[in-house]
Length: 378
Ligand code: UD1
Image 1: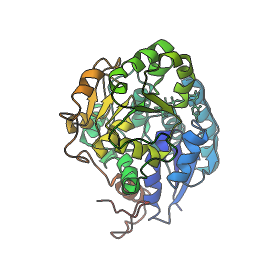
Image 2: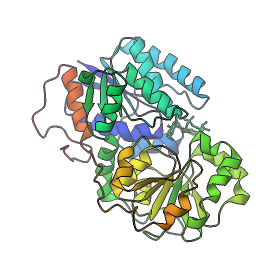
Image 3: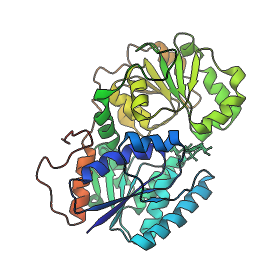
Image 4: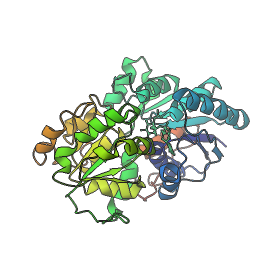
């Protein structure tokens, strides 16, 4: 029986792998195993996502935990290699751009196990981002390159990767979003005082370059003043940011509401009902685009250029110098008139079909591939 090993490690990975595992269940002859590297390990960063997204219990947990990039990558390399030595799968599937993605791909490639990379070819062209290094190297190590769109596929070709390896499949994040968006709870449980739909902003900041230096974090938070003066700014705080936030406590803008990290459906609902989202995340640019919610991205570059042309996303600079102006224009240029226009949903069904074909399994009759929600890919 052909065997696929999926590797996940960090919060965004869980969201991306869930619809692929669900879609592959249409090929019962394929054995699926799940490896969790343990890069994220808290209940709020990992445990809750397994439950909410219907992920199976991992077959192997590598328990690597936190550390420097070198520590984390090296620990995953060694521990995942030991798993591969015992199990000899036919394919390793990695998603996104975190340290777990690159380390697992490298271990597999060195063992001669083919790697499939989901989100291949996504580029910010900014090598100061650790994720950009992870993306470029993972693509070079992969046998199957699942690009979310034509821009990403063109990037892969420019880097000399063979056309035969590249498939433009759409964006798996949007499959997970589609599986949840029709049953988002509102108001969000546990938020007291409750929020008024459309009457608040959401902030997320977690990149090391933004949050590890208290002065820099303070500077970025002060840019929120014009927004916080007019509406509450709800700030689900990543654990990396939590420690630094304590040091800046005196300088927090009035109106900023730090809260614990939320699970997947609650965070989706928080974004969906917000007036705008301010973020340094990659995935949130895509999710707000699909939801038609204005997004102000605290960066100079984006790996998701389609969100800019779609009109929901605006780059306000790494120092957020453009945030006040962008916020003032809210309601005119930024609000998307075409929510979902950037949607390339159905990716997981296409990926499952290509993977199964690669492993020599027969195509399934139409209608056999389905997502967790029961939604059929296009
Ligand atoms: C990682 C990814 C980033 C992704 C983000 C999503 C890399 C290089 N970065 O960044 O691309 O956007 O995940 O969250 O892989 N911590 C906890 N509990 C946890 C996990 C982390 O407290 O369960 C704290 C630790 O103090 C740790 C810090 O968060 O040192 C950072 O975690 P780490 O996995 O190194 O990177 P992220 O910043 O989460």
